[in-house]
Length: 399
Ligand SMILES: [Zn+2]
Image (cartoon, rainbow, N blue to C red):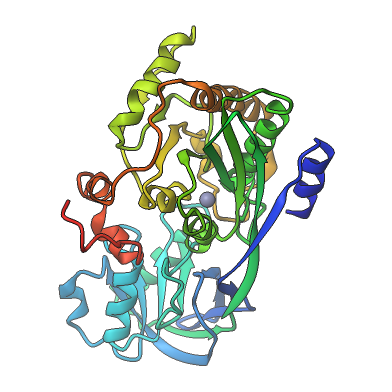
């Protein structure tokens, strides 16, 4: 953040560091080892908001998808192994595991190849009721095979990671236009301690910086605000903070850049009022995007808190090649997976869209009413997940 602030000052901007507090978490020297039938350590990564716990030894139990029937057996005091195919949200899994007296959980990673998916265990920032770990697919499946053959598997678990409040910050650059009406463009620059976070989301940081570079000395009809968020991975804390600060600010659109490869479509995220503006841009450009303008809402990245505050939002359908994206949230999300051409080609399209939003004379001004916002999520079936994340605040409106 400090390096970026210095680079932005060198471009002639006055970046603002907007500090805030969030539920933080610090990875410790956690250890999960098999004691029986073999003595060896297992490759694991604690999920964010797992809290420190004294070492203990316990039998492992295969919970499969953790369906209600699999919860009926005696689980008290054991370490549960959960398959990657489980349909349940982390919050449900953690609550059920704690209710059944499990002492820890090992979630098998959905990617093979020794990968560990680092992620948050709690979008609300609450301390997890038991330590939850990601385990490699290979070792997780091995434990399941041993158990299926009736071999008792005994594990030792020691959790030193801990939950603690932290102060962090967003970095903000304002590029004044003729009108105070604002287009916010954001990207999150936190990654995971386990890797560089080149794709998630160093790419977005670079795109936003490229945008800062390209918008210097431009005369814009609307104001453009560039914002680099912190705390996205742990629970969208930076964008929640920024959205909570909006007050009555005239923010017309928020554009979110989270793992944006070269766009094949631009997405109005379910807000039909935005579609004509994006269609105008798309028709005016010579080369069409393969899927043009889409209008599908999705969760959850830094656009979500803005949407919930009534701000229209735009993302891109811009897949990153599978051979690169499979490494995200782990050790191997490194800069060598990110061809420079992706940054150049993607930023060209992103910049076009931002300029169109900043200049289109018929962009709808103002925010959505709360009822319309609630409908934006209910019509895409997203309400249950928002409730699970503690972000649903529409119980008094009638969508
Ligand atoms: Zn991310």
